[in-house]
Image: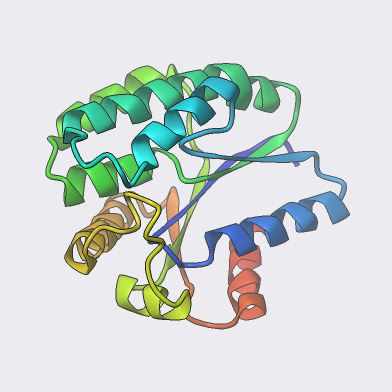
Length: 202
């Protein structure tokens, strides 16, 4: 298996972290070199930007400024970590990527999708996502499962209405790009959901 760039998307509380860890272990057991990373973050500069974006105490962040912070973090992440890892033959699994920006800042915040796509195009500098797995779990169910919002995370502590817009955004993206973004029902148990993911990977 040649190196692949795989992104995992979904609403807060859909089980991304758990499924990413299981997928990493699966690749390792099958002797496939793999690394896991996240957005915003993944490299030192982007990790410094991450708390600026997620800090709950700062309520003055303009949506466009928020978008620019994501784009800056992504550009550094792509050039410093993702591209070199792929070039070295590793499969890269990323917890959130460009679809999150389109869902959160575009569909939920209302920023022009054209602007978002342009910034993503610049930040990626030719990089292509080969497979995106959307863990499909409506926000209401997701927050019930994780027993509430993380009040220290500015994004997660947004209103349920906001997260419903994010969810609808993801579904719209999946409908437009079904070959790249594959939807997995995330409402079952951990093992059940992982088996569904493996079906796509295999």
